[in-house]
Length: 168
Image 1: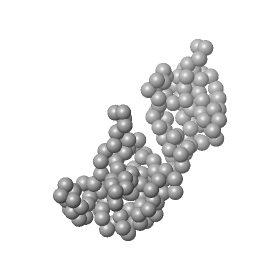
Image 2: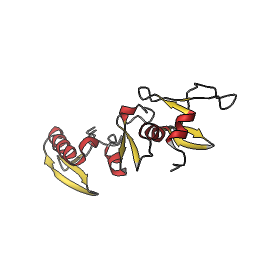
Image 3: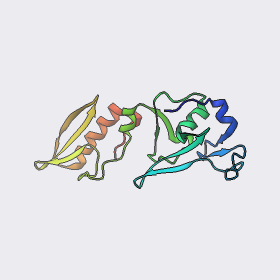
Image 4: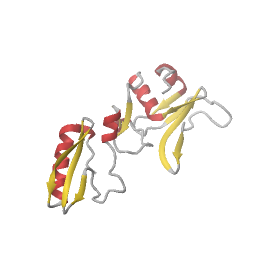
């Protein structure tokens, strides 16, 4: 990841609003980019929303990483997680530092899930609850009802994942 600009330089070319998550240009950069214009481009790949990128000195940076630099004065040590899972919501209260594992914990349930709940599957007439703990799938038990399996999964998820636990 490109971490070759400083917070001081960033603040000299862009302003950031923690309430809206928007970056704005402080000076006119080109005939197309004028002073106070919103900075950044929404990037999608194969129709999937990705992130907002901002080009500074001919290099693209992800806006959420720039927000971290702008607000803390340092680059994030690993990844930045969007609490609400919206990669375009760069409001300061929506961003937090995370490891790759923590960032993966804060994901939605896969669309192909037949139960519609994370860590729950139907097998041999019962509902099973599973949770990945320290890189290993951990069996949490079999239950007659999906709600029981979901409850056990939720308790374990909160215990092991803390604030990064996403239950749906």
